[in-house]
Each structure stands twice: as structure tokens, then as C-alpha cells.
Image (cartoon, rainbow, N blue to C red; front, side, top):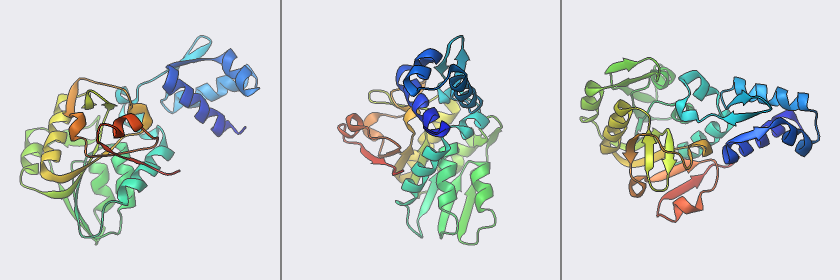
Length: 247
């Protein structure tokens, strides 16, 4: 088994159980404990876990800073972004939330005739010289930690626009709580984005699943279309359209 494959399986176990032990992993994958510790160190450096004596515990990605979140699960984000981009057609207007997964989607939309409205400086930078894209940046109060414009001015700007699609990221996604985020200002801006869009695409990798944080963005019945990297039949049973990104 290659190191990357082993680390992916370790991460899956962390997501499911919340913790792992070095000795158990070494026995399961028939490698030395030293090799397992190297795997855990690599995953820790990418922001997935915190090493402990004899093992590791999972980190909830919602609580990581921008750099750590951006480095987490790059392949899953690329797959989700690509699957979401397939639903957006030339000539449409798209309201893009700030976030590492929405940034992955934006990379798939380059050189496509669109109107892009965003509160993300990173997304704006992708399109600032793209002749096919009409770019609108909300402005507002700059949040350096989230790399996003937020606050009353950003919400007021959104009130003047309408988009074919609102595309959101989320910190957590739960069958009862719906989509929730850590910060009140982020929740308020996301709700303003939903109000400005005709349809909503919610992008969420599997680490957001069955998690809750304090501020609600969308109730379960209002989630629209959820694009994720693993099947979630329980969510689909609530009437939510679930799109599973292909590998």
C-alpha cells in the first residue's frame, strides 16, 4: 500500500471514530509504528489531526485557520468544485461565497462567459483579467482571517443583485441543524447571498457531515442542492438533492 493510500484510510478512520492508535494502525496495515508516526505527522502538518501519546485525535476543520483549511482534502475539494461547475452554464450569473471549496469551483469556471459576484478576494483575483467574466466584488469590512469581505456594507451590496446560482461553503452540516457556521457575520452574509440567488449550491466535503457549530445559515429543508464527496442517503431522504462528486 502506498503512503498516500494508507494516509487516506487513516483519515477516514479518524473522521469516523475521532481518534486512532499507532499500535492498532501498524498491525492493521502491516507496517512499523515508525511508519505510522510518519503518516500521522504528515496528516498533522496538513491540519487534519493532533498527535497524542500513542496516537492522534481528529481536528474539526471548521476550527482551522484559512491556510490549514485550504490544505485539507485538496482532491475532494477539486472533485466537488468540478461537479458543482457542471451545473453552471455559460451566460449565467453566479454568487460565490468565500472559502477553499468555492475557490476550487471558481477555478473550474475560468474562461467561461459568466457574471461572478463574490465577497472573496482570492476568487476575484482569479477573474480580474478574464475577458469572459463580468466581475463584481461586494466590498465591505475585510476579515483577514477568513480572507473575505463581510459586514453590513457587504450585505447591503448583495441586496441590489440577483443571481442564477448562489454557491456556499459551510463549516458544518447536520440532518437536524442544517448548515451552520462559526461566526455570526459569516452566517448573516451567507443568508444575504441565499436571498439574492434563485438556486443554491452548498459545497461540503465529508468532514463537515454530522457536525454543528453555533450560527445557522440554512435549515435542512432549505439546503437546495448539496455537492459532496461521499453518498449521504439520509440527507437525500429529507428531500435534499445530493450530488456526489466522482473521483
